[in-house]
Image 1: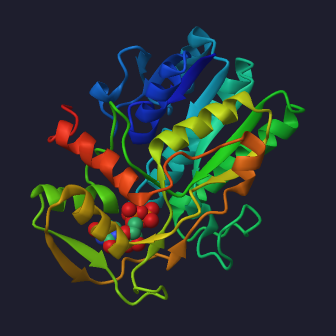
Image 2: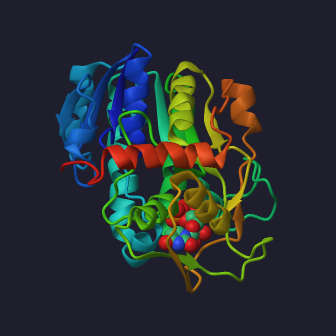
Length: 325
Ligand code: UDP
């Protein structure tokens, strides 16, 4: 297949591009390089630098690539920033996604796979979280992703199923591949921040709250390896399924367990500070991914937190300053 990857210079996009190329597919990466890195674009991929905000630019890019499928990763991802600047999120994550949907329809693309998020559930009532849980996002980031899911759903219906889509609701993406890893500026995610503390780049890691309703009182998340996410994208492209699927391992790990795992894997000690709760953090987010396993035949390979942390640590040791650009 020829796959058009919007946002292929970002974390999950670059890892998925590497995976698709390793599986023998052709890839065109389209990325504005606002947050992504040019050096994260796999050398075997075609690269188009462009912004989704211009319909003619994305139309031309899709027309020239003639892809069999599109994966849409290009979005802003910071919950806190989305609370401060909702329009920035709706403009980029929703309005620009409409341009990509338009280009997909105009060029008879068969399948769109969309990067969605567990943030569409807001504060869920039942655990583990299945796709039947009501979607009630509590921040503009989660809402912007849900809006695009709905747009794709209507587009699929309007096309009488000619254009198919799968929205993949990731829980906490983590880890690294052989070549690619996580390098956000600023970094806000737990595992890369704890690794910075272990590497001595940061003086300490701050635990955001020890008063949650969990056994050790710190928040529980479902950390899923980026290569397992990559595999799910390819399975989704190959499938005719239209709808939304959760991607997580089903194993929850607390903030304290992540810190303990990093200490074990790296063999390094570092200071742990106590902080206030971060606004909008639910106690526990753990996926029921039985639908992705059943419908796509998805089988995550990394069920063990230490293995996930170890892959991220290896990448960090090989790239002490992250990407060059
Ligand atoms: N967290 C923390 N300290 C940090 C960064 C994150 O205690 O410096 C906590 C955060 O409150 C959440 C968990 O780690 O409970 C995972 O946060 P992350 O930002 O990695 O992912 P999120 O679950 O927000 O998507």
